[in-house]
Length: 393
Image 1 (cartoon, rainbow, N blue to C red):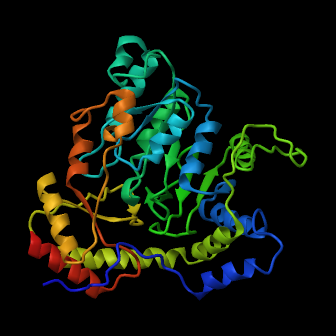
Image 2 (cartoon, one colour):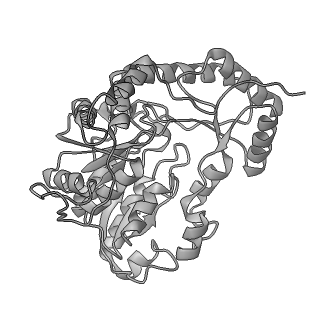
Image 3 (cartoon, rainbow, N blue to C red):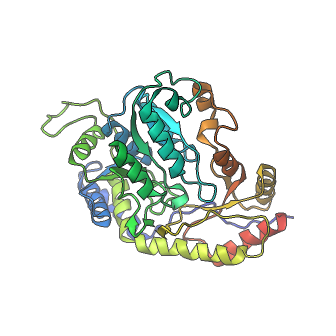
């Protein structure tokens, strides 16, 4: 017999401060592109120490703007990870570029820098050397140049950013850091999102801070910043008059309600991160002694982990699916993390990928299970999740 646990998969951590900030927007004449977006952007400039912060409607739109700013054109190649949310590859496809996947580290899920280096060297060489990295279909431009790196910080842990930065510098190409899951994390005491030429954070309700929907692009590059500021606002460049548009742009603006919410969340960032760290500590304690579970390794270079989700890896796909099904009957919500991008139906159809192309990514995708996680969980909730997990294992 099951019972209701009332344990949500995730919960945004909101207070009356956020609610009042959103209500205050109603007393202004600006519901979009007012003072609140400026306050939110200033919070990120202060946090990162970077010159520019550009509020946008989502992490996806932010990554797309970075791809545009990097000058990605049809047939251009961008090295990225197949173990991620699909947006990190979709934004390359939006500009008819070609995502070049390299497999990931088995203990973290982050892109393997050794494979990325080898791929970059071969792609720059072109010809037969490049072909081994290209998909079976849809990449006839085998001699197209490698134009950018787009590494992803998975589950909140920065990838090996120094190694990826070195690859980008060696080939004189930009590095776009997808830090959408890693706000608050640090790599060798440097904040995630500050080691690339451009980086993006995202604020979906399960992220470290939330604006409901929204994202933030950060960079030190003035040219890129000015272009992305124009592109998010329908392509209006500085000096354009009303209804004049210098560029082909988008409606990627972040409205004042989202920005007001985000500005308050940023003022509470340390509190929100500490709450998540506390929940992880409870999980660590209550998972002890439960067999058949592995966790992503926290690397020595990760000097702070901000914990986007809490992932466990089980023995195999059959075990993971059985455990997930039985936990749901016990009212414990869980999710698989991630379905490999190269095995998504539209990627298989377009590029001819098949199972076995990226075995480490596929193994992690088959075995990964996200447990309920948020900074609002109590120790009793965590203990109940672990009790039920132990029971079904």
